Image (cartoon, rainbow, N blue to C red; front, side, top):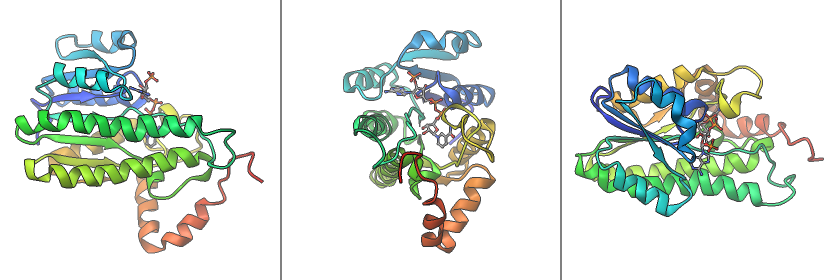
Length: 248
Ligand SMILES: NC(=O)c1ccc[n+]([C@@H]2O[C@H](COP(=O)([O-])OP(=O)(O)OC[C@H]3O[C@@H](n4cnc5c(N)ncnc54)[C@H](OP(=O)(O)O)[C@@H]3O)[C@@H](O)[C@H]2O)c1
């Protein structure tokens, strides 16, 4: 697909990477960009940069009514970018209870799934289009100090593969983006190395143009993917030492 003249919807557009998606879409000539956020007031500055192109949309991806309302409002979408997520840096055992693990599944897995379901028919009617799901390298190997987030992203990767299979017949390209640490948002507190947000969104949009299904932006993610291919058990063991501080 082409980004120029596309109509995109970006979830979590008020967040770190979400704003970079909106700006990259705009600079590549998207005709309309629905910038979605739980609180659309937080989008005022972004919308003000190009009010003719950037349309604010109220959207909580965990609320089915809100998701269906967004789909009804945005019937011309050709490119859906499921970027919204939460991550709490909790261990699976070390966490005091399951509330944050459940929230990670609600937003990252069920939220993405609800968006794919609501927009599948919109994309069918425009002849295919594309879905970009922001996954993470930790979908492929559990990072123990962020264990429940990793599990939610593993579920998101699996749903991406399943949705891809189900929507292939209608010509919808379904892309998984799997960066390691990004120098933005939830990656800010992490140590180097980090990939720049510009590189992540450029690689994701280029994948939509080139028809690439799985994207590993940045050197760190590419090296991790190569290590996983070479010796997955050795890589799991190397990452297993990164424990939550309260695990003994
Ligand atoms: N940063 C990294 O190092 C990194 C690495 C790999 C993958 N990723 C993935 O890249 C994406 C963007 O990450 P980021 O670092 O930019 O995250 P971020 O700065 O924490 O932004 C997350 C966005 O998601 C929104 N959101 C959370 N819950 C929502 C809900 N229920 N409904 C709608 N929107 C909701 C947030 O909105 P509110 O302001 O309303 O909370 C915020 O706009 C995520 O999918 C993340 O998992 C990030």
